Length: 391
Ligand code: ADP
Ligand code: MG
Image (cartoon, rainbow, N blue to C red; front, side):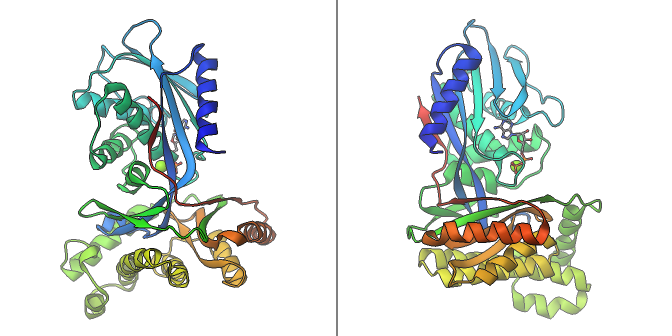
């Protein structure tokens, strides 16, 4: 579905819910991280891409002229009504409306003058599928509010406002990647983000010969051991042994020299982060130069490092990567890796555009044969970031 079609559907949904057409519409994309995993909380580098899947929010001034905001989503039953004469607070834990309400609170905190409005959310980003439907919802809301208030935010400030909404209202202590790419993504570009300086840099991927194939394994292994917190603590121990502020400041030589002062597991965790930062910078150069064999090799190396050193992969993600390797460059696959936090979720492959149909078919069939699970696949070129569809 094109973004125009999605916008059209959203306007229809709005009319069905509220009995009149919307005045404003804004859209923001989901994302996939091409490379740079578990580097964000180590002050490192990430290289995400906006995907051709969007969340649209349509709105019109409240019909009764009262200072009340109503929010509906086609993906969710609970509608929300917000009285602007009262302080805005987070709703119950897990409520979908916490994301847009947190963004509204961020605008009010900045002194924005908001009257009541009715809004309808409609999306093609799968919810909870690791493609950041949460950031798409926040950034679409922020883009809508810029339009309603006439107050344009600086892009970095806008992304940080959305991140704060996710922290404070949804209770999810996320990094900055998802909101940065959803705000600042650009068609035919990836975005290299330095998570320390928070400086984003667009990386042209203009060669139409290649696209990204996202393979959702449709598994999510619930881990009881607090694996994410453990990884963060291990990275912390590595920085202490290395005497650096964060793993961003370490390189392979330093790590080897300090190896004896770390336990084996902490060493391997640090080796992943240090090497992943290097790979991410090299991959950005490779994308710029349309050097696809190199970018693909870096993706495979990233996967091996996440699997062996960081130990956040799982048999299903490994299966997708093995299938990609079997298909090989001759079959149209340059590289493949798990993407996102791990233990399930999605893999991403760099695929020749003219081979996408054949590769998708082969990956889906072979994955199902090996795991007895049906995967979900879709292909995307680097898409545009947040936009106003109607203002
Ligand atoms: P991800 O961001 O990977 O999709 P999250 O768990 O971070 O997964 O965010 C998913 C949550 O965001 C959903 O459970 C829901 O609360 C909210 N959400 C995202 N998109 C929508 C939508 N279109 N309509 C309603 N809620 C949404
Ligand atoms: Mg999310």
